[in-house]
Length: 228
Image (cartoon, rainbow, N blue to C red; front, side, top):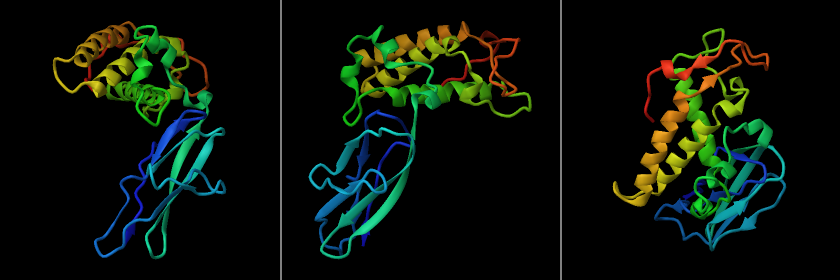
């Protein structure tokens, strides 16, 4: 049997490079060796031979749900599977911080962008999700008591430093392989700055979903710290 395996991001921004990775595809022992690996980045674009590198680095020029197809061939019939990838515009992504804000603190940080990407937008997106989760864990909800979404944070300036320092901390955590290396030191430094930035935040949230910030601000200093 042939087992096409695709590793890909759940969400990627328009014109942001992403890697469609088929390197974990495999066969059972009774199957012949894989002779061809092909990836179609979206329906109708055609399959591309990636047998040598076993992945396709790609960026999408339009938003929407893309159907990524992987076709793996041995000496028998090929096996094809499709996977969904959500591509969003910068406006819909609504990230709270940017790579430009990172380089103001770490001018060479883009040198650490991993192969298959050209930005740290994936880390900014993780930071965004953790900030929203922090609000939920601290019982900051909408007017119906439901979990807030990223749309509730209308003014990104209020969380920009929080998101920026968290993103830097996450990047250096991912680079560290020892508790006393330079990346570990930098991660600890940015964790401290992240905590300070969060405690300075006055969040004017949109809790009723009308697109406007509420008149009463939420002071994040009055809530407990939840480590992530």
